[in-house]
Each structure stands twice: as C-alpha cells, then as structure tokens.
Image 1 (cartoon, helix red, strand yellow):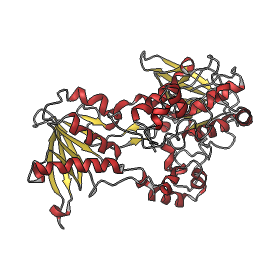
Image 2 (cartoon, rainbow, N blue to C red):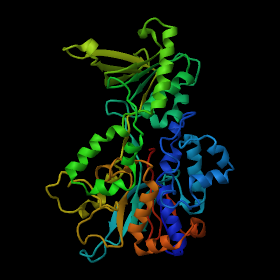
Image 3 (cartoon, rainbow, N blue to C red):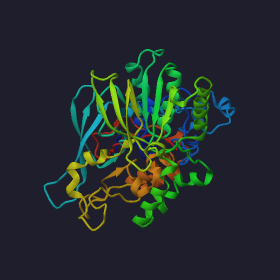
Length: 477
C-alpha cells in the first residue's frame, strides 16, 4: 500500500493509520475458504480495525452496524462474536472507502535497494518489482517505506501432493469442495487432517453438506482440546503485552511463547466441541459398534505417506501410523491404509514471504554474531527490519507485519493487536508528523480520505518515493 507525498498531512495520516490495518487484512477478505455457514469469529468485535486505537473512528465495527441500520438488532444478539460472514462484509465496507487509491491484483516479486553512485552512501529508496496477476505485466515502483504483510501461505505437509485437486487446504475448503465433490447426496469418503479450529469446523460441516458421506478426522493426540478464552488467558493477546514480550531475554521469551502456544494452536472452541460430540454420540442410536459409525475421530494417528492414482480404490490413499496404546502396546505402531475421495488438510500456514522478497537486501543485514537468530531477519520493537549501521537512511526502511511471533509474541499473527500495531508502524515511519496529526485530530471523519494520487496494491508500492507497501494476514483472536 502506498501513500503520496502530495497528500495533506491530515489526509495522509487518515489513510496511513487505516491502511496499515485494512490492507493487511486483504488476504483474509479474499480467502473465502473458511466461510462455513454459521461460523463465528473468535475475537471480540471491539478488536476491529480501529476501535482500540481510536474509538471515534468512522471505521469501527459499531459504526459499520450503524451505517447498515443493524446496530440495535446486533445488540439484541448479546454477543461479542459476530458471524465470520458479517465481519468479512465489515472489512469490505472499510475497503470500499479507499477504492480510488487501491490497486488490486498485484503480486510483489522482489524488493531491492537503490544504490547511489556513492557506494558508501546509505540507501534512501527501495525498488519494488510487481506483477499484475491478470495480465502478467511487471512494473517497478520506488519507495522509501516498505511494509511487508503478506499473511500466511497455506502449508501442506511435504509428503502430500501439493497440486492435486483431491488434496484441499482448509483455507480453500468452501471454494473448492463443491468442484471436487459436486453431488451432495453421494456417499463420499472424506478425511480431515488437523486438531485445531479449522479442522473441527470442516469436519463438523461435512456431516451436513454431504449427509451420506463417511468422514474421518485424523489427529495425532488422544483427543481434541478446548481453547482457553478466559479473561486472564486473553490478556496474553493484549497490545500492551507486546513490550514485555519483546524486552524479555530471548531464552525466556521463547519458553513463554512455547508454553502459551496451546492458547491459539491445535485447540477448538468449547461450544463447537460440544456440538461435535453430540453429533457423534447420536450415531450410537443407529450403530451398535463404533467401527460402523460413518463419522469418526481417529486419534493417535499420523499420515506417513500419500499415494494418488487410478490403480487405487479412491483418488487418494493415506498410509497411517496408529500409535494408540490399545493397539501398539510396547511394540511398533500399527500400519493402516485409508482410501478417500478427498482429504482436507488443516495444517496451518507458513509466514516467510519476507525471506523471498528481501533476497536482494541480504547484504544489508547486520554482521553475524553468536545469536541463534543471527541468520534470520531481525526487527526492532516498532517492527522495523534491522540493517547494518549506516546502511539505510533514517527516513527509509522496511517493516514486517504478521511474521514476528518469535520476537513480539503469539498475538503477532492475530487480529487482537492490528489496530494498535498499525498506529505504531505509521508513527515509526512518519515520526513527529504522525504524532502531531494523531493528537490534533479528534475524529477520523475530519481526515478520512487521501487525494487520489496515491496508489495502494495488495503487497506492492506506489510510484512516489514516500510510499509503503502492505499485504495480508490471516485471522482471529
């Protein structure tokens, strides 16, 4: 996303503060794969794109409801968790306010420093090469400020086919399942891999979507675990926790993050677990033995290899290791095979887009030291990438969003800190100008829209030297 230096300071800051929130949600807006009917957010609507930074902003979720004439009706729901479908519409509503300064369908390919004739002079601008995903046309844009927020890339285990239509990542479930399995009444065989919220939602949805199907949820552990969203645990995701996490000694921080991982990874909301258990329990009424149930959870299982081809009884054959103590005892794990028409893998995301984009900036890294992370990109508290002393001008730089969990904590990939972090990034880029404008403006309405000469692209930059780029993050909490 880019801003133009020709904008007035008030409009510039309005654009910048919202854009760092809004465009980093671009991927979430466009990835409709988990828009399962009835699915709710896992985060309070108060943690929207603006409220925690500026409750009087035009872009709060409450103002969205008011604009849509649903504020009173929503209040009657007595919930802090809107439907995922409604929250996506809220983000689209925010995005529409910036249609004249947004350029979509752009893929960032690389970021390169622009060196002056004086080889020792600090870098003042970066060249960002982008590709139009519709036309294939490449362009190069120059900017002082680059924000990389590419979100998560769906991660499919390496021993699974990476481009087989019968292997679907959960992020594409809703957009692809109907193409691969077009007949809702057919007795398909479907496997779901994973133990988190996405896997549970998909497994639960399959019963309704394909009532004659036979489904298997494959998990490594003994049972699905509930997420802990109690008040004390939720404080882990508070924006003000970022300081203490970042300032902790690296070994302490790593232990704290690992200890708290089960607040966000491989856990399921309790209400969904209870619904799933009730659905599975009802199979007792029709079948005397669990082995005959059409819908089952296979625990203590791990898929060791996958085969595809016409020689099998189904498009996909899963080779599974069963380490259930009831079967394995003290001996080796039991080997199983499972033939399915489709396997949905809910196996998370990779967050390393910045590594590829910054390949041509590698020589600007600080000199290596004894730190374990010395070969990785390091960031400051304000998410600014650390370069070698004097290598980059003070009024230029690169910032990362959504890929700093190791230094900034579990909330870095979630929505909880998005509004506040956006303000921090803009202040880091614009300094006194950002602070002055923020304190002077009492309402986002008075400094809403920038002039239309700025350009924003999902993961790209503008032609102006004072622009910045942004991309997407994924969801919740």
